[in-house]
Length: 176
Image 1 (cartoon, rainbow, N blue to C red):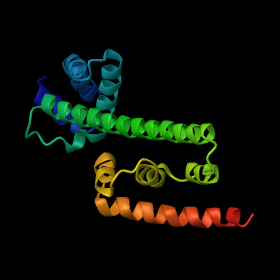
Image 2: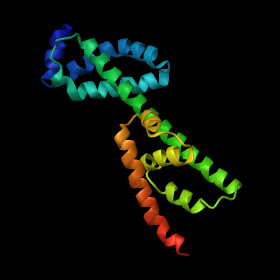
Image 3: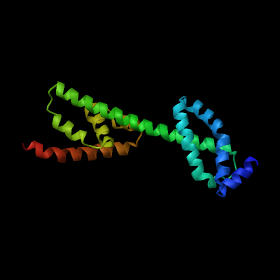
């Protein structure tokens, strides 16, 4: 049985044809992902995810490209998505470290801003970060927009709304 026949049967629900099709392309996909990721363990995880996605989406394969190209497209998109998620996670970790650094700095200098830092620490990171970058580190709105890869208007609104939230939260403390 050739690949086209297996594809046809797999699209019609033949599990054995689909299993054989995936088996036939496993080594090819693994070699590709090892080169892309430079990490055999990560490559293996991506191969498994790709195989699962192929099982889910086999009915959408339209034959305009080779089956191996279709699989590589799926694998590549999964890898890109994974890298984006890691970038977001890394940014979040960096933001958390920056906040801890700010808290430590304030404590070391016995500055009276600790109530504000405590209030800022309870904010969502996407609100907290632009406030810290603008009002603690002195970056311009445009620089913050570039750093966070968000529109300038979004930076301005997050800072404005975040400061409004801080004022409300700190008002009771100011009366003590």
